[in-house]
Length: 121
Image 1: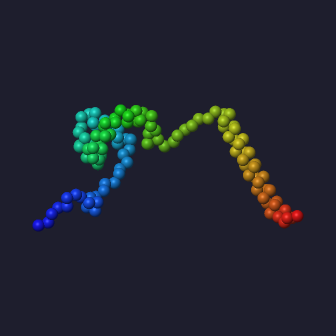
Image 2 (image 1 turned 180 degrees about the vertical axis):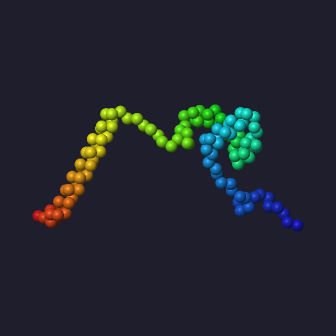
Image 3 (image 1 turned 120 degrees about the vertical axis):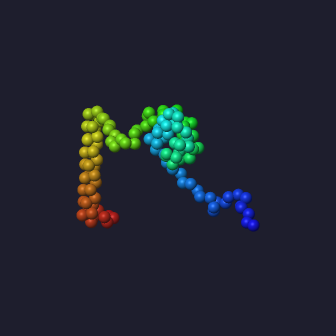
């Protein structure tokens, strides 16, 4: 008669991979729980364990606060407004950088063309 192993070894236990849950799913879980759905039912709907759903529900206040200040995942473009002075300053800086790059290229070219500059005197 074969005996069962007393404890499970790592070889016969499937390790479950970690799943990242989006903010939309978390908010849905909190909303469903507030409407009276059970953790098992919510977990099955989102393919999560009941304990994962319970820990999400337990921190619902923090999640709601975070959701108010978070950028929505559907946002495609972030717009920043700058005043005219900053725009002008950036344009002048860009022009200066271009001029410095051109001067550096010209000085490198002139050094390469003049062999007397390469040999020690």
